[in-house]
Structures are given as structure tokens and as C-alpha cells.
Length: 391
Image (cartoon, rainbow, N blue to C red; front, side, top):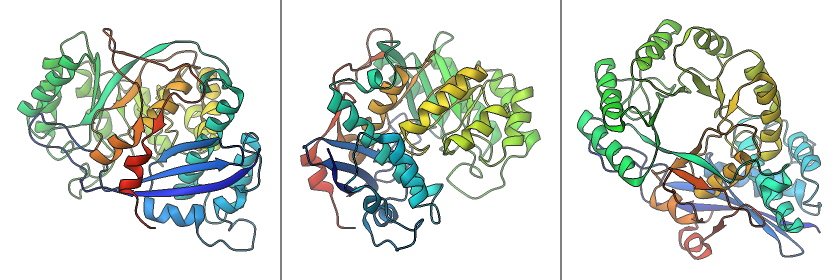
């Protein structure tokens, strides 16, 4: 079998990223979305989503490369190769794009391509991806509703009640207005905790951008980061996530050593080398590789081994389409311990229309992990065709 095509597919939507004051649902990136399709001469193909600067990523995959090694486009590197040789191809992609890549958009594109190759490999063997990655340790996992902070306590209470009514046993609120007003921050978290009650998990992602994403402001210093963890502990928060600049490993380790709340992070990191440092330096209790950013499943498998050795939990970050949810579920099925799967309830009309997936909550707030060949989800090709635009 040979790879015949590596196709970036750029989609355009009409919604913006944001959250309301009321309990109405928030919206993730509804303006642009990139998909990657890897085709083969035997008709098997893999699909993956990728969270990146989508218009720029198209050129990295299928634009005009240069003759010198390290400046090649990713599609050029792969066409003609055996798609089942996944790990070797990861190395080839990394070296072939090293001068303009190694992190950022190039690594995010490599992540999507790597996921596609694993999907093709699973289809070719007739196995589920989890079986291919080492075997299923579980058939289901608890889902947490992943959404944005609303801007009023009343909106937070209304939103939280909506997730309770839908059967979620865990909810994560993130970003939004959080960080603009410390007094309001506490009111928002208190409203969520009061509504969810003591028997449901409340997770908080304050964001590491200055004052969230709504307006510029100074980043938290170490004392402020620790103070944030201290008061979040008053509300029995299950973790505080990704709230320190991602380059400040020393700060993560220092705050984690003193925090009463578990620390979760890693969605901004990429490659096994970076995660090895992050885990070994004691930065987190829960490491959160994003399969669309970290380097794909090839890297995620290595991260899982590191985390097991360090006795750190792994909960993949997966706030994108249900294609990413599907890949994450297959990966989660193989882990020694599995707390949650992130379930994006804030999908825009664009991100929500791409995947065809069977994911539903059961009576315990759990999501079943598909066990058929491949990843357990597909794509709506008619929807994709209707939203596709020229690069």
C-alpha cells in the first residue's frame, strides 16, 4: 500500500469564538477549521482535524517546498510511502520540516497526519485503534462537559444546571471573562459549585493569556497563581488547568508543590522531548497532551509511558470536533488509569457538523469507547463539501 495524497481541506464558518452572559451555550472556533485527509492506492483513507492557523497550514502541507532537506512540504515528504510505517514516517516528517517546524503549525500538521496514518493502519488490520495501540483496558470513560465561563453568576448557574440535566457528572469551565475581576471570578466558580452540588466534578481552566482572551492585561505572577489555587481549593475544584505561561516549567513545578488543588496542563506542548521535561520536572498532576498538537498518537503513546513511570494521570485535551474525541477515546482505552474524556459541548455549527460519531452519555455520565475497526467515527462529506473553500 502507498500514500497517494495528503490533502489539506480548509473549511469556513460564520460564527465567532465566545460565550454569553446567560446559560446559553458558548461557541468554539466557528470561523475556520482545517481537516487533513490521507489517501492510499488501496482505497483506505484517514481523516483528522487539527487546531492551528488553518489558512497557513494549507501551505505547509500542500504548498511549494524547497529543495533543501528541512524545508520540504509535508505532503511531498509522504507521497509514495507505505502508510503502515507510521513511526518511521513521523521521524521523516520531523526532519523534513525541521528548519521551519519542530513546533507550532508544522507540528500541529504532523499531528493530524500522524493520526490519519494510525487510522489507516487500524483499518488495514481490521482492528480498533485501541487494540492496535496495545489493547483495551476499559469499554467506557466518564465525560466532562467542556465549555467556557459565562459572564454572570446567574448564567453560570443556568449553564451548570443544563449540564446536570443532560447527565454529565463532571463539568469544566474555562477562559471567557475569567481573570478580569477576581471578585467576579469567585462568584462564577461559587455559582457553578452550588449548582453542581458536592457529588459532581468541577474543573477550572483560567487560561494563561493576560486576563483571558477578552482584553489585554498582565500575566499572573507566581504569588498570584498560587493564590488562585488556594481559593479554588475552597470550592473543591478537581483541577486547575493551563493557567501559567507554557514556557515556565519552573513556575509550574513551584506552584504545583504548594497548591491544594491538582495541577493539569500540557495542551500547549509538543514532542516527546518537551513532555519528558515537563513530567520529570514535576510540573503537573494530570498531563494533557492534545493529539492534534502534541505530535499525534505516535508521541502520545510515549507520553503515556512517561506518565505511568512518574505516577501522573493522563487526560487528553480534546476541545475540537468529535474526530479528535474519537482519537482521544481510543487512546484513553489503552491507559492504565483514565479519569475523563473531554467532551466539547461548545462546538460551533462548523466544528459540530464535520464528524459522524455515536457518542452519547449513559446513565452514569460515561461515554462508550467504540470497538470496531478504525477510530469509531467518520466524516460528513456533504457537510465538508458545502463548507470547503479554496486555500
